[in-house]
Image (cartoon, rainbow, N blue to C red; front, side):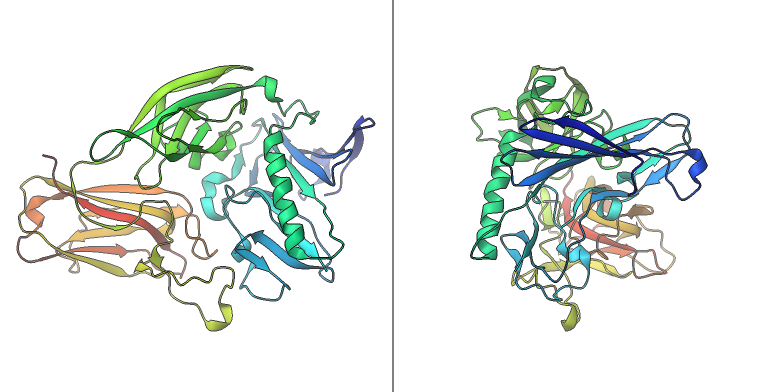
Length: 463
């Protein structure tokens, strides 16, 4: 990016911060985006690396703009940087062509604290590649918007013996040290509040599904602007203060949901729990002020359930990792993901109809509930029939057209989360014979319409 202005923000014995900015000018023509971009770089004495962050701003009166993704990228000399490390399990040395494409180097943001190249990568701030179009930024004509991305620490270490594993272990130790520093106190941008300008939240999450209500051992918690349950997945533009955390709970002590971590503002608390379907939302607004400590007490998530489970397929963990994925052509085997784990069922890669067969000794006259969890969908439409799927028979349930995530084409095992619940009248089921539920991915035309299953279960009527 060619900047239009350079400025020294700070120049002391211990710190240098510089700014490179570019501001849109209507006379610049159609090839310049209507956005004010401020790229910052910080160097601290005694630190082997640089900190960097960016501020994007769209002023009122500027023309419309769609931003699909924003990333920090470095172009390295491939003659020198030959060793790639993404995680302990995914290190390639020396680097040769072992993957089909760039998406096979990806990992979840929650797991991607440290990664990079070693000499003998890029960091993505947001992208709609897995989350769908809702995770982009779509600015209307004359709409004001501003967001800061970062800071990211670009670590430069060295080892006299040039041992990649030594450099990797050292980078992990540095990562642990950086986490303890958060939020950084040295950034001079007014758009990045320091710890004294932030607040914290403490509380405990209980889950009621089957049996007594119990405190959960862990959960993924999201603090985001107010909306419906799960809405944070589709409103990235509005999520100027979104915080994602993994809360750990012993069951005896309250979960500390990020001491001095949250910007001042009005939030809803959202959560998902491994092993439990659905999305939790705390309906009370959480108003965080600088220095505040909010005690939210004990929250209870009543998981969606109408009756006892008759059968289930999969694990409700928001990934398709336990499902079968067909082997690719031998020349395209991804060596970063080789696994001998046995998998069941199938992801839907092409339009097809799956059959779930089961026996029932007795059938109630009430309403059964079929739950279908999906963790990705692209231009797909699932249709469900109960014990009949002849041509011309209207499906008993359909999702409608859903998804624009394209996770399968990008080698993902999860993207946006979807939960569908279908009522099944007892009159549609039979006793002492095989019942069959037909699930069809209806959309056709290209190889890309698809879904990834997370979990399917049938519940008996409530008693």
